[in-house]
Length: 316
Image (cartoon, rainbow, N blue to C red; front, side, top):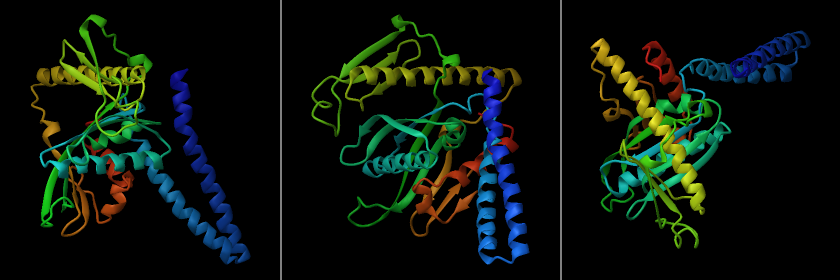
């Protein structure tokens, strides 16, 4: 029944798209017969909107990975560069939250480690919505920023990096059983900006999975219970991702493959000086509208990645 429901959800927008095409044909014929400029202009606007809708539907059709329909957990970490790198983490976070907002997705920042003077050393957020992971897996990798640093009194150009990791949130059917004996839970006082309650109680939670050494922490909620729940969500997702990676590595070993170290690869550059451009180094897609990208206009970049990913037969 769940598969049938998903198929219906997938077909619904295509059926709506077909109906819009039929309505457009009727409108265009009416505009021609009546020689109505207003109707003709409306038909042209709808044609442009339909093209955009088709591009979105085409992108959605590429989301066929095992976990593409899941929600996403996105973690952003500053690279070398001090305050400049921490500010870059905040810029990327805003970009993804704005993208999620455009798509009507729920956005929940569950952990933030502030920088020493500005920005954030790391941020973890959950993006909840249809195929959030399928889209955002395009963002996994190292992102480079080139700009005149607002933190440099001499106004010199700086290059800084941040790494983005995206994993699917664990659905009920994929949940991993965690032995309580293998988990170490610590509470501590939240750091950084917050309300009077946040910084005066031990509401922050750090969970360590002893067998694997995985550590997850959450501190953005006022309630220790909520922080613990969010930390467990992230831990289960990371354990699932670890299991998937181990399975893929075993298959690669059997085939004699030597997969590249994906996490170390720079996937995209954002140039804000001396010119403005965003370029994806995997797909060679580039745009001069860097401000729009940083404001969350990622659909063309994501669409280009999904096309490239499908043509290379990689998947998620």
